[in-house]
Length: 171
Image 1 (cartoon, rainbow, N blue to C red):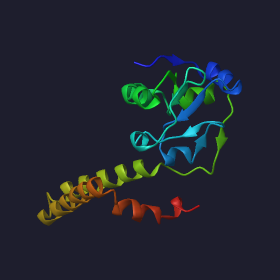
Image 2: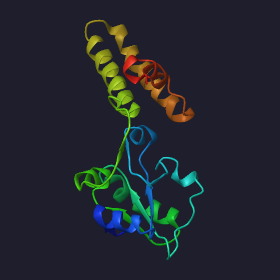
Image 3: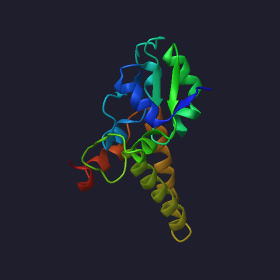
């Protein structure tokens, strides 16, 4: 388990050049708000990235949105750090609440991953409910399930491609 530091302590050490701050949030989260001076290294890709190892002179401090992701993945982060490492207590949310600087970008309505979850869940639920009246609608739920399996295996998500074309996702 990695020890944690308060956002204020991390900010002071970052300003002094004593640490490296690594933000493990995903790209859609970083596109909304980011912390100046933080390196972007999404947790989903972190094991495959060539992250420069932490040193005694410059340890790594990992941050996510609320602190949960970094805490839940502390063993992976510790291994990837390859040296001394900490977590930001409360993540970017606590960082903002402490009044520390952030860069706000054009706000998107919801991260793409959440849009996909809402869309897939709604289609499955609709398909199951509609199949009570029209049995053929059970295939809608099967189609969505097959699409999610395909997306998981290949990394290609048709629903994400469709949602990306929606007006609220245009920049």
